[in-house]
Structures are given as C-alpha cells and as structure tokens.
Length: 129
Image 1 (tube, rainbow, N blue to C red):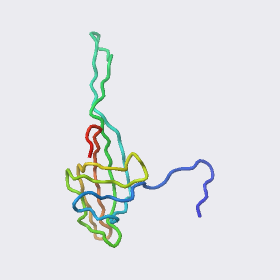
Image 2 (image 1 turned 30 degrees about the horizontal axis):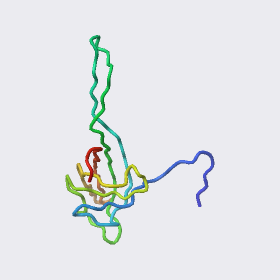
Image 3 (image 1 turned 45 degrees about the vertical axis):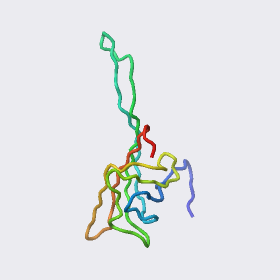
Image 4 (image 1 turned 90 degrees about the vertical axis):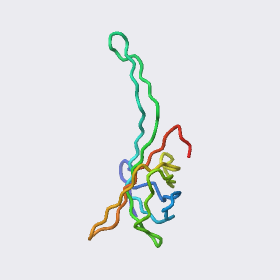
C-alpha cells in the first residue's frame, strides 16, 4: 500500500487503449509515455515604427506522442497505424481521449528487449473526425 506524505503527485499514463485503425488490436497495447502539446500558427502585425500591435493565432491543433508496446493475448508486433489513419485513444484525460490523425508511427526491436512503438498523432481544432 502506498502512502502520500506532503504534496501529492500524479504518476503514470492515462491512456488505456488504441483502436479505430485497420491494424488495431483492442486491448493489445501498454502505453508507457504520453507527450501532449498545443500549437497554433501566428501572424504578427506591426505599425509604422515596427512595433507589434496585433498577434493573430490560427490553425489551432494538438499533437500527441505515445510510447507503447504490444501486450496481452492479442498482442501483435505489426499493430501500428498507417499515416493518415484515424486513431481512437481511450484515456481518462479528456485532453487525450478521442479521435486523432496518425502523422507517423515507428517500431523498435532489440535482441534483448521488447518491441516498442512510437506513435505521433495530431488533432486539428477545425477538423471533426
């Protein structure tokens, strides 16, 4: 049993499953890392003195990088999404939960280690999946 003394700290990953793409194996992933960022394009407008008087932000999007490995009875070393595939992320974090577009996916294998996946996803504010 764990005991917290002092300030509580949130540990671990919130995502529990990946589905929605052709090679998906429901329940076949253990997610070991999540990196989320929010981004937008920016246009700066300057006055006659060169001072920025207006900043215009547009094309909002979130990017999500997941690290995981195939696991469970249905695990497959080939269960990666393809570029452009819709990936549905099941997560207890509302910022991560939902549909994403796969930007890239890679896997690494080693003689003395497990198969690991790196999956890069994007979610545009203006596109509804």
